[in-house]
Length: 283
Image 1 (tube, rainbow, N blue to C red):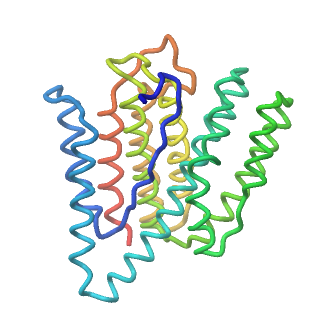
Image 2: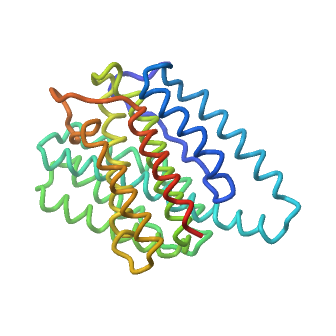
């Protein structure tokens, strides 16, 4: 059965590795440039399938080099953990922003969605890295929003979840390249959601647009942290990523975009291409 315009769609996190970033950059850049030029329609399934096939081929080709392959597998798992955490945080950021704006009905779906669809898979990665779970905190936040709790109480519950998410991020020990890969992954998933949520510059599926907004907010937060670091390469990546994301202010003017001019998913893909290029300096 097709999704209704306001129903959430399950997002399957992509696996990202340093070994496959070059292939992704080419596909993203071409898709972004073509969309910006208006030469082709954006078919997210085509480029996504092409990139996934390239990823699987590249990873298989590295299998003979045990040390590098093992390192890639470790990074893949860490990046998966970071990306899953980012997806959950993105949903919750959208939800709390909507709740603060008095849009409780819209907020509820964003609070329930992460635990029902993403957290179950995330638990495997949490266990793998010895990170503490936060199912109780997620439930408390969802309960507060569903029960119409005061905004301050909901914000406190949200802060408790964020604390647990940061603890889990620390356990990933993904390094600068892993963090960059997770940022790139979040922006690419945001592009997919935006492509569904916005059609011809108008809202087609508000929930999906809001997901895209939330994922970009998380990517921006991580980039701000990286930009503040003393390491020159990490700081440069953070600054370049922030510059790329700043170009999305028109496409993502806020969590509730009604009545505002919007963009197209090609804008997010172009930002992803710039982030990809900035990540090459990281090891």
